[in-house]
Amino acid sequence: MKVYKITSATNSFMKMFNNYYDYEYQNGEFVSDKDYEALKNEVSHFNNNVAMGPAINIEEA
Image 1 (cartoon, helix red, strand yellow):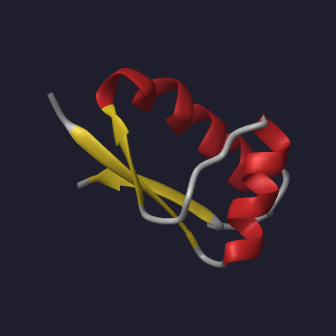
Image 2 (image 1 turned 90 degrees about the vertical axis):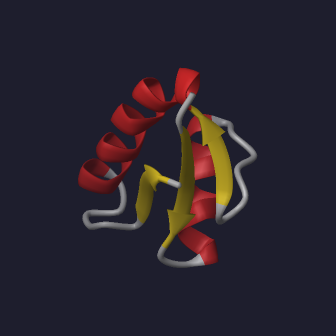
């Protein structure tokens, strides 16, 4: 099982991301591989359409 970590450029971007998707992620929180694919797509959508830049990152821990 792979583990991923979600990070944010700033705390305000993480708060915006959580509000946008009704999540409660903390900056630096670990994410299981079963949630990775859906979350990866949401991060991409958020960065491209809401933040207009690389605000949220999800990577293998």
